[in-house]
Image (cartoon, rainbow, N blue to C red; front, top):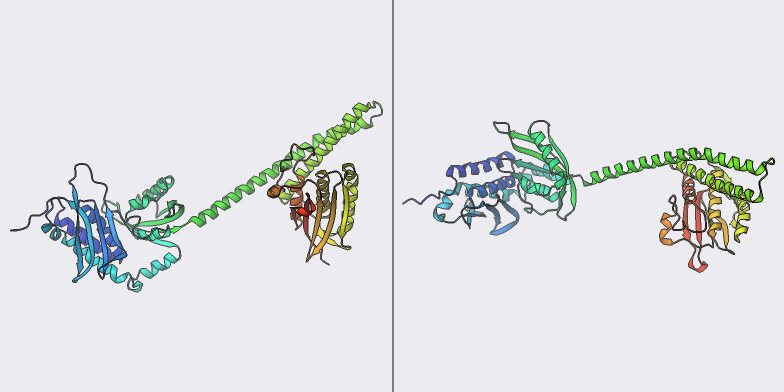
Length: 509
């Protein structure tokens, strides 16, 4: 009596069709792994249990990377209960693997295997092909090409839209750090890795190509790597087969890790934005400085007229108030000048005249100019060792401006009985100038902020006036002259204080 045919399973014709499709897939692509993934996907549908796993065996032992499995969507309510089922896969009398799955309960095992025999034979043949080629790249003409592309950071994929089988998905998984057979073998599995914010962009690019609006599919998006980070992926592809209605049935494509390129592009974009913001700031400072100078010069001019007006002389009290106006105006005018210089030097438009500058006489001029200010503050100005005939290459006027600013800071932030000392020495082809003061010193953890504009390191409310521009301007001027300006605290044995160090090129002999 003939065995009863399991009516709850697909027809034998459907089983034959899927087995033949998988074998044809392998013949066409030369990729047994892709065909096995397709067959597993088909098996999950045919078994009606929602799961199919094809596992390779070598000498009776499982092969680590020889697992091909798929699962269809979760069973709907009311579907029959399932049970596990498996069958050995034998090719030419040799066991090559196992096919496992789930089937509806009540199925007759005696009829099940013969009913699925085409599926089992196709799986066995594909496993035998895969096992024979896995350790021999030369037997697969595409393997050397794919290996070379992989070394270049390009990973190949193939998508069968009829079964949603995504061949070579492990190539893309390798790019993201996943082990083989971890992320699944369908496009739906890959879609789970795409960043939610980028999914619509990828889908829109695919749909445009599927409709024939673009020659190829191209998308750059974020995908989740095995370590949980987001990597940028650049993906390209093309539909290579369509059905009678023009719908895509097969696609080929490549993927590459675009994280480095994206980060470089983002860094370049950030740099351009910073440069644009800096240019806008410099232009703003330049315009504001010019606009402020005109009315301020008028204020100072009228204050001077009041002081020298003999027709209507000022009372002593009025004269004192006019002097305060002039002092405040002079301070404001100097600050505006510093602002204008800073904007010009940052934009590269400040005129610089590099020349040979004898250092000793320039240092004496600066010290003599500030002696009265130092005496009023109770600070001793001293010129230490400066080698005779020492000549630096710099702009004499700008170098004097820098030295006066540094010496003035040493006086302002000092203490009665303190000192400021100027020394210079030769170090190879460079001249090193030290301006040492015995003042209140600088917090070492804030030295990196010292040369930023308008940064006074918490001394805004102190008794010493300042705008926080002078050191920023000095730093910029020294750099424009090919030098470097740094600040260092005095050694602990010497007490509190600061060393401002200028490194400038020596003038050619």
